[in-house]
Length: 443
Image (cartoon, rainbow, N blue to C red; front, top):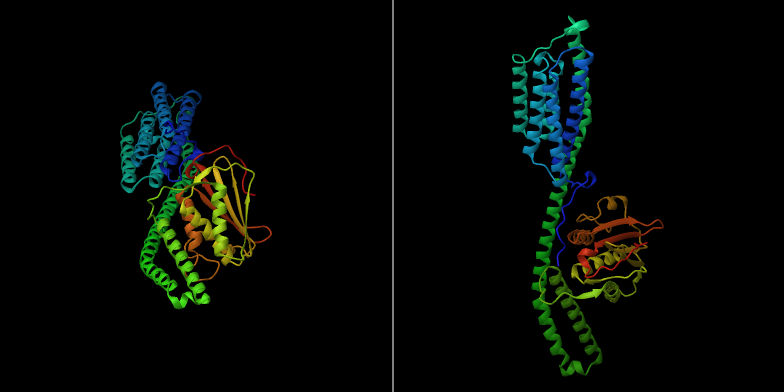
């Protein structure tokens, strides 16, 4: 039975890497809160302390509308993982019109705070597409031109009467300082959000290229397996005929060699069947279900048989392990890790298994030379090999892609006392049939 759907409420630290629109809308909301506070403070100071009569009721309506706008934006942000470009454009357009209304009620173009239009244009240049930016520029310019002719004039009386120009100079300085501070505070994180989105898109493009590479390798391996199947079958038939030839049956040495050749052919056929199975073919049989311990020990036993003399030890933490689906790709991934350790010159390999509530941890540690700094920086990329062999580096590349397909991850490091360690983490929700409570980790 599927679990009931639950609406997720995202915290800022949990936003997806590509939700740059959402982060940018959150910054606009913060900027609007500052604008509301600044407008209310400026209106009250100007009206009550400086003695410049303003239409208080009308001017306070604009920040009230902005407050409701912010509340609505926050409600949308709690339920959405990203914000459309058109929504950012409308948000900036609202701020331009709100500023225009306040300027109209407080002197129009003679108000030094008219330069705040530049903040909206700068944000639009960073956030919006080209046509949208020019839309903000056109609306801001039209509003500024209108305010030169249509506005409510300021009425200055008392001690400030006759000092309107001095007030304009002071206001211009305050406005320019505000613009500089706001641009630093908000354009910088907006640019960072855009850079993170571009980096995320670059990672997606690289992942797509790697997956295409994997598909091509799978097709090549599958084709080679099919092509090799026919001559291997012919060799198996010939060896079967040789076994029954009188001259070979009378010679014990020849008969033993034929039997060894038959065993080698059978092993080649088993390897080709595994290649086809990993490539997605020949999967008519039901998937095998086995306990984790049995699965790992079977891999180790098979690898020891193929690599006589290599030292391999399996360590299991004191945990209860669930049953898993013995996917051949996991088996092949672990075999690749063991093969890489042996080919790197390790004489002692330790495969450590542990688990916690969410993850199955399988680490392969060896006493070889370890990874070089350059190799650690490029680990998991195709054709990055520490063995200096042409065409090498595909083993770890395949392991990384297996982990990624299953929702897991790979960590590669060097041990404090030498040697390399590669840790495979697989989500129990993807590989286990039952998930008993467990704790602990690979030491």
